Length: 148
View 1 (cartoon, rainbow, N blue to C red):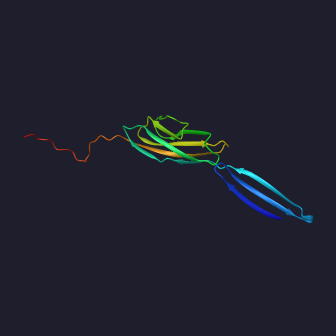
View 2: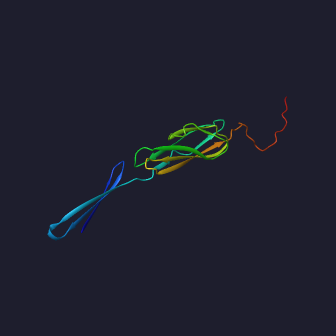
């Protein structure tokens, strides 16, 4: 018995082909090919964490997706943690904006499911720093100001 194994790969699928050859009496030979499509979980890659400072209270967030089965069948952004109730303007898009942010740290998750029902996700952290007053506190109590 002779065993051949070949792996073929393209953008949409990975195929494994197994050829079995049987040689026996009277030169009888048979070959069988078995092909199995292998689909992988989509890889979701964060577009990067963000830091903003109030009074700016919105920012754009994004992910990219690598998936052997083609384009994503389902995309959904959700807030995992953070203060208040910010709004995700386009929760079904790879690129979106979050608005209504207040001072604090947020984590937003993008879940992606492919057309084979497999899913992956990535998190984006958004840090919102409080507004500054523009005054510098030296820690000293100022002396009275005298006019001449």
